[in-house]
Image (cartoon, rainbow, N blue to C red; front, side, top):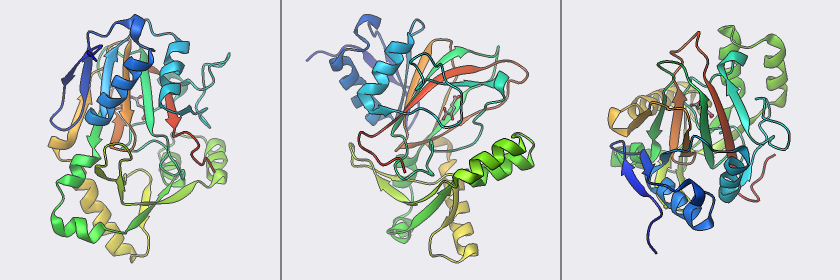
Length: 279
Ligand SMILES: O=C(O)CCC(=O)C(=O)O
């Protein structure tokens, strides 16, 4: 079968641009199957789709899995509740390294974000390939991590946000009462590519299960530093109409907050694997 678009790699380990895509073929199953293959291979892919309508955004999301209605971010409403709106004018931001909602038992597998309003400069998003980060660990460290699990806790960044005055006490209490935390393996295997990936973030991961506190802190701090190697990263400068899809099983991401007081507004949808537990 001939390809419906071309793919140009953008970063040394991850990131690629989808070019020559016919917008009329965007939501066809064969195009989506090709996009999925490109996503699994490149871990984050961007395409320019300025006229993308919410129903097309959702059609793409439904191909990948079950779109989420986000617990606390506002959404488009009117039948498009699964399209979350992240608008800096509402105080919403995500300037922290994280996997989306890794405090859930089965976190979203793919997220897709469509740029609506951008600041005149700044507002880039960065990703880290956690598969490459795993590959580049020493054999000794890989052996050490085998079988270890770490806790991912939503309360950790909320407490930090409260201390920095970026959430109200009311919202803090609301989120803390949900008490969302989960123990995940420190190394996961991608269900499609079979590649191993580190699964931790400085935002949600509080400690390695079963280790003494100082040992857990030392190992996590080494792993966080290791993941910051410039070779594992990819940074995207947004253009209005860009749609960026990332594979939440293989990457960490961070939306740089360097554009205030300008507005930055994104429409984003995360999808869960079909049948995944949401408890
Ligand atoms: O706004 C962005 O670029 C990404 C925000 C983010 O972290 C998210 O949607 O999970």
